[in-house]
Length: 261
Image 1 (cartoon, rainbow, N blue to C red):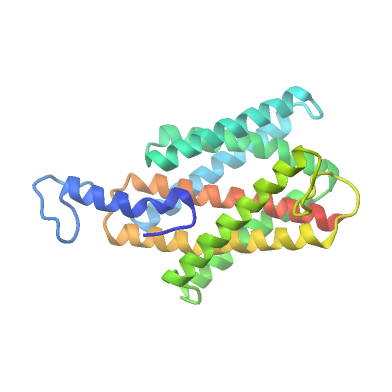
Image 2 (cartoon, rainbow, N blue to C red):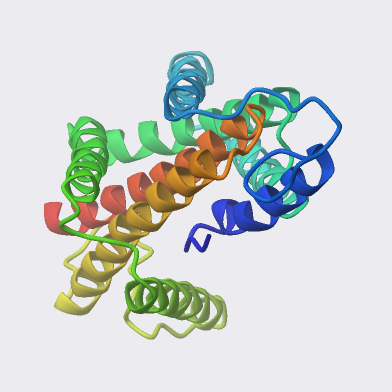
């Protein structure tokens, strides 16, 4: 099972290893008693739980942390970095424990709350627009996948993965050039002044690629349920969806800030 989301890409390995260890699944008659298999409802419930944690913590950070404070932005930066490190650990080690995944959601909530409040102070009403846009795109992708309008074929998968790698590399390169006083023009890092067409087009491309990754993620989760992944992997799948939603939210927030100018 392949997914452009690095969190869910490794589910195929996990499914094979789990069936081999527990003797569960087609072609693996074993002696051990398998755990209950993961269902789509398990993934949905855990995804909603993680989103609720991120949202509640984000709202608390928005309200409780002082605005325009260096300490606040330092705390948000540290939370974002810690969340990134924890996310990489969860992804590459295939951590399925909620005791690790829930703190990730809380850390991301702190960063989201502070960053969202800053954008809201610059562009009134932008946060609710970004939230609606994020979940709207997610819902559209879910419907398109359910109706099989978009399917995770090998060609589709290669295209999306290649496009995702491309936009990430270009974004990182643009940031590196910016640190040395240059700008490739793909990103705009100021909060005022007019924006040229290039950052807007690039942001639209990133949003489009981010939306398409959900098709691969839905397919990976569906295959995980088909091959009998244990129930604990529902946390891992929910974590992968949360990563994708946060990525999409930040990019929509960026695009809306461009358009407001």
